[in-house]
Picture 1 (cartoon, rainbow, N blue to C red):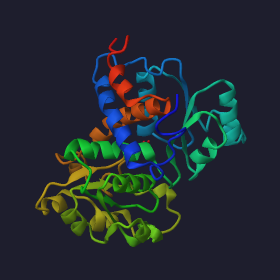
Picture 2 (picture 1 turned 30 degrees about the vertical axis):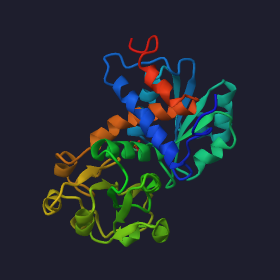
Picture 3 (picture 1 turned 135 degrees about the vertical axis):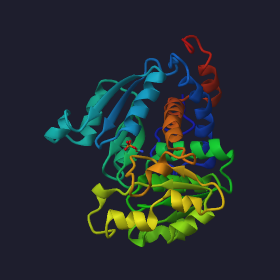
Length: 322
Ligand code: CP
């Protein structure tokens, strides 16, 4: 069956607003499955999915695994250590050997930008990008969109500011593409050293002061400072960063409207975000994590060729509520 998304999900940049809307709408009925006592439907029974995680991950890896298991797929997890990658085997050889065992899909996280596309062009299985270098993290972008849509009802005209280390962030790129395609008004805020030189080409607003960004925004998506990717002195110190750009309760209290707080995780508490904001009433950070499972179920389902109306019937198919 042909998928309405094509063979792979590699990025949000090439998707149409209709395709993004379809994924978000398809995720809605899948939310309910995770609320059941027995969280399983037979939708992908017989499919085999390999999760290739060559970089550390908590949320994305476990969320994909839950999504796959809740759709009754058979899953295998492969990491760099413990596989023949540690002996020098190439990514393509690893994937082709897995394909020889008759798999259907590969979910890949990799430190190199473009790794997911490179693989997708060389294997027949569906490929889902679970984050590649500083390029894109499309399912994170989608779950952020779903969380914003849950709260505000409509993404059109919504003012969203992405705060912090945009330079190293695949989450920022997927959010910028996804939000713009869905009609939101997008801004970024951070030290110029952590904004890409080409930020102007995105056609978005740039704030140099966090106070001004908070005044403008209805939602802030606060990014982690990716210290492991910083090869130079991008900021004077973590303390200085928190003093100038930190999302703190004192700053939020000075704004005359509520600002929704998102963070893709993992958080550097006390650096880009203070604990009383992360755990406070305006935070939807754990709602993002919950929505991640539904979004990934929707992506797996649609790539397998599912029609959106079948996602509804997945709830009532035989075994659907067992
Ligand atoms: N948001 C995100 O990608 O988190 P992990 O690195 O834990 O998967």
